[in-house]
Length: 156
Length: 191
Image 1: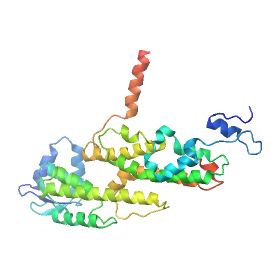
Image 2: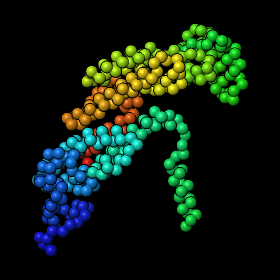
Image 3: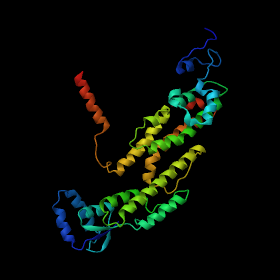
Image 4: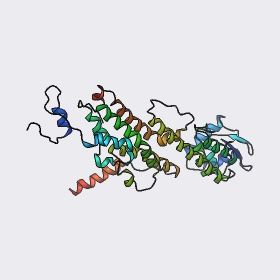
C-alpha cells in the first residue's frame, strides 16, 4: 500500500531502492538517528551495542548505501563510537586472564567481540609460553573434532 | 653466552659421556661443531662463548657454570626499569630477547645468577611498564586517527602479544574511515 511503513530486511531494501524509480524511501533504525547519535557522542562506553543490534558497525556501514542527507554524520558517529570504545576493549581483553569474560563481552557488538577474542588469544598465548606450556605438543583441534564427528556418524 | 667449564671436566671425559646417551644425532652435531673449531677449545676453568642452547644443555648435564650476560644484574636492571618508567617513549632494551633470555636462564641456571628472584621481578616490572605504555600509545594513536606511527625499541615478544589485536582494530578503523568519503562508500561494504 502506498505510504505505509513496513519493516523489511536490509538486502530487500537495497534491491528495491532506486533513486530514479522511487519505489521506497528508507527510514533509519533508531540507533542511527539523531537522538542516539548524541548519546554516542556523550559517552559511547555506556551503550549496550549487543542489545541495540549486534552488528552496529557493519549494519551502519551498509546504511550509507542509501542516499540519506545524514550520511556523513552517521559515518562520523560510527567511527567515533569505535574510537571511544577501543580503549576499554583493549584493556579488558589484555588483562582478563583466567576469568569469566561473559560480563565483559556482553555489551560488545560482534565486531568488537572478534577483536576481544584476538586480544585474549594474544594474552593467553603469552601466558602459555611463560608457564612453559608452549613447548608441549598437543593434538590439533581439527583432529579432535574429526574424531568426535566419526563417533557421531557411528551413532547415526 | 659465556660458560665456564667446571674444573674436573675434561674434554675427553665429555666425549665419553656423549657417546653413551641415546641421542646420537645430537652428539654428532655437537662433535661437528667442536671438531671444526667453531666452538671451544673447552679448557676447564676458562670462559668460552657458546650458543645458548648448548650452554643450557651443558648446564643441565652439570658440565659448566653459566656466566650471565652483563645486563642481567639487579642494579643495572633497576636502572633500566626506572628509566623505562620515567620516559614516555620506549627505552632501548639491553637485549632484543631480554624476556626469552631471562626466562631460560632463570629456569635452568638460577644457581649461577646472583639475586635471581630479584631479577625476575625487575624484568617482569619492566615488561609490564612497557606493555602499559604500548597500550597507551595505541589508544592515543587510534584517538588521533593517525595513519602511521613509528615505534622504536619494541621487542618481538611485545609485538607478538598485542600485534594481532592492534592490526585487526586498525583494519576495522580503516574501513570505518573509508565510509566517511562520500561516493566511495559503495566499495567498502564487505564487512
